[in-house]
Length: 159
Image (cartoon, rainbow, N blue to C red):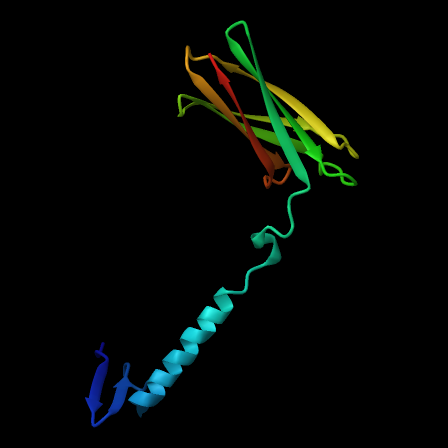
């Protein structure tokens, strides 16, 4: 395999890659103009952002977490609501629940449950074992039946 050759002579740049390849010739000025055009094109394209990424189209779903304690367990209740005029997508949702004690993850659970057609609110309660004294936080991520996140929320409890 031959190496690419490059020659800079009298303000001209000549380069070739491999045998029988296309040769590129031009002055330094035209290459600078090309580089300027390419960089401005990249900047222009990168400034085009979809509306949803700017927060223009919020999620029609929200949730809230409430925590109770009984018999050495936390009971983490997550309630999912749809916006006025919409319903939950169904036919199922999954609650991916992460439990933290003093900021350290100590328990993860994934609970799948059914959602009837036309439902606007769903509730699931997940038992989580207590791990002794401390400050606990519980983070719920609600996924639709295809695995896409609908919403997320969190709650705290101190023992």
